[in-house]
Image 1 (cartoon, rainbow, N blue to C red):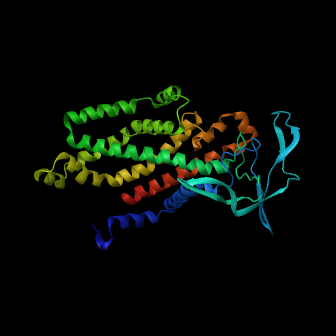
Image 2: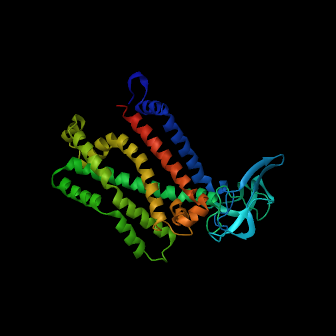
Image 3: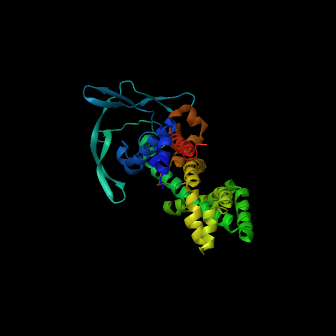
Length: 355
């Protein structure tokens, strides 16, 4: 259906959305995140599981006539008199040459696809470059952050999709049917909204066997977050459905003999999609932050998988932060993702409902 002037509703929304600089910035960032999800290991300069010296500071990356090179810190043989950590220095350190499409050992890029190239990497065998430094095990933070984006975003998208679908169907059904069905559903929603979630997460972390595979651990995490996350949206959808159920086109469908399920799916749910879409974009950053929080507590994914929350476990030591502040860099990945989703969600909300 077209609006006045021949433009469809989608074109009008896109036109209003483009006027938001913050929204377009967020959308561009999401496109970049999408590229990272597809080819993150190719963009990573090092193997994310490869270990070097612990707590290596970020490398100095420079450009000369021969191209890019990195200067890495190396131990001086002395210990800090306060922290007793090895003192590192870049003075006299050799230059690590960096090249484009460098051949490396074959690795899995996506699914069954294996490649033996990296976009930018040290050209010398055994070379290293730490854009954001190295963690306590000597693993490159930047490379791990690019690879971890897949797991963190997979959890966010899966939980966001499941909670949105459940909230939409349950809320629309509750608001349309009313009566005893509505009362029972709302009591379940009240229970879920009042349920303290953190003790449940701690209990699950203690009950899940340590021998459980990483894949099953992530599946249990997604299922738990989905079960606890749909109640708020369903309450919002119920309120809107109570209004839509009194519209003339719904009454006409009832008069023509349409059953309840058809009315909910074909007549009520499509008119809720603008609200659901905005709510979905605003739910994703909340899930990213929740996964980071649970990972910080050790309740998210487990090795050998990598997630942003798992990387934040290194930040739990105050002494490590004081001596090596660069280990806070994983926060930057979370910040960028949350900013992008929030910016797009806010701009989309204004575009869908300009009033």
